[in-house]
Length: 338
Image 1 (tube, rainbow, N blue to C red):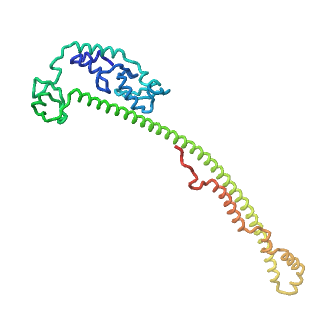
Image 2: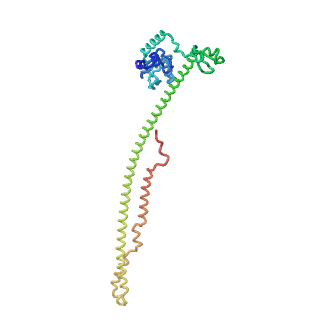
Image 3: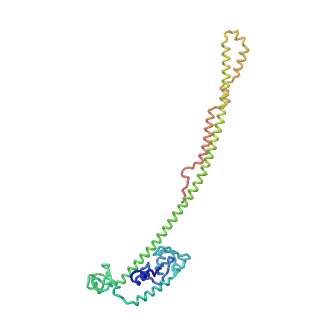
């Protein structure tokens, strides 16, 4: 606290000094012992203990067993978080300088004559000091107003007692607000931690999921290439075999066509004598025709062409069933941990 700069401000130095000696909790002059916080602000030890207990309701005070771990609270002036050790507020350092300044200030005030201008005077009775409080009208007034004036039918109370009561009530409200702010700040910190943990977990799960899918994509690409090569290889084998059969049947067809032409020429002989004279030639031709096997019997040794199509389809179905193993049924994927 910069007392020097406060004292050189415009106005009465004593008034400026008094403002610097006011506790932000009880709004009165510091009551000894005065403790100094790590943020360099001062509090009455009693006020510091009140807000500390409000912020840490389960912390055991010095009357009971001392907790091995201290609590925490926030400075009412700057909101700096003050972390206590196991001694609580009794572990805070006393500000002896402020206590000495308070003693000097009180001595100075007691030695100075009381000035009339320091006390507010009644507007109706200019020579009377305001010394009572009208509870009915909720306003300060003087004794003459109660006896002869506008407040003679009202209920009044001593000004100092009302002042102390309202000041205590305001101080309690401030303590409650400070404690409430500490609890809200704790909740905000917890929620911020939850956000950070959620983001970290989500990032980790995304990374793991991406890695697993990259591996799966690589497996699928490899399997795809393997199946395409296999289908191409089977296609080439089957086409080669079928083309060989086609060539074989064409050669057979050419030979049969030539035999048919030769036989037709023999049938065109006009005379029976000539036809019979060529008996040896016709006998050889007949033997060749009989040696030609029936296309139907020959086809029995050849695989049915339609079987190639069914074999090709069945092979693809088997590979498709293998791929279906990679397909996970709906609902089997668990929820993402966050």
